[in-house]
Length: 268
Figure 1: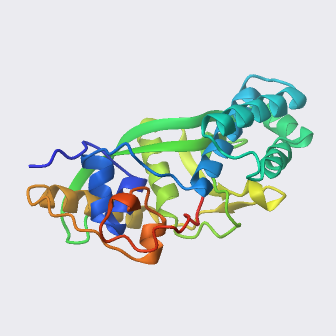
Figure 2: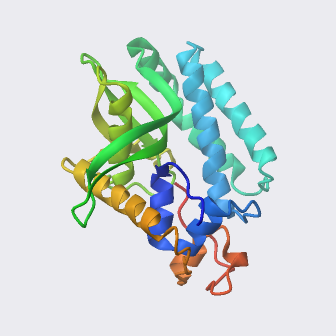
């Protein structure tokens, strides 16, 4: 019988629903020879820099110090991840400069609203699967940014997206983040969950539509239920397609991989 993880994350459920062979390599075999696309690394180092800037805001540094801290973190992460310096490093610096403008830093510090940065949490999510099974699961997440809502005892959960601005719509990931946060903070509940797009010039925040928490719970609990019910079988076949394979870090290992040369398109 395969040893499956005790917890499930949004990314784990997404991979399960995309390609079960990739899920096995990631979460059961825990293969370390990943080939991570440049686009994903670019997003990773920008997240490191954004986190450093918001932590500096929490430390009440000047706007100049906040930007310097974030830019230093960007340079270090860029080098550690072996990104070529020709890979729009100047553009990444511009994103950081925009994100931590004087007025933005000043507003955050005056409100004292930065509560948590890169917050790792595990919480119990309960609900129904698509087959009508009542169940619970431990769900893990890393929340990019938690902001206090001015004038209320509630928070805004914000996730940085580094692609083109789009509507948050029915974003399952954000809905689950809200559930897990609320499980830990019943006296500081989530009022708003949003996407921010620092690559789009001015910060563009889109609020999540109402009514998506139940759908998100059903989606991730169904994935967890399927994983547990097929663990003894252990037959997790690949699901090859140009789109799926272009998003897979293990396509070099898969005999069914399609278009293995493609770069991953999204850099969430």
